[in-house]
Length: 132
Image (spheres, rainbow, N blue to C red):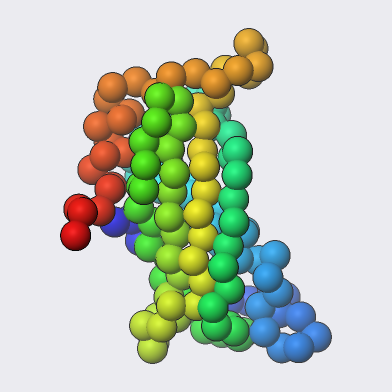
């Protein structure tokens, strides 16, 4: 399980006083980048694209709260993997949002997907949750 914290800034709230839904995708992106960095998946060249993303909004979040984002790999394919990101309010521990992303390793020169190496698959597998 990968973990990343985000402190909610005032500029991320809307007229209703809660975090605007677009910002959850930014939090997910920030956490994904930290995940890539911590796994050392990316070298000098960025070779991943986001093929799909979704987020379910469960509870409102407000300025000055801190979110803890837990990320884990759900599925590993030939050239892609699925990342689940659950966002919890730090103080209460309540789940406030849950996202899912499909990330593809991509060859920008050929404009097509590129297979994940066995080493990458092993590193990603270390972040898969054990089956219940």
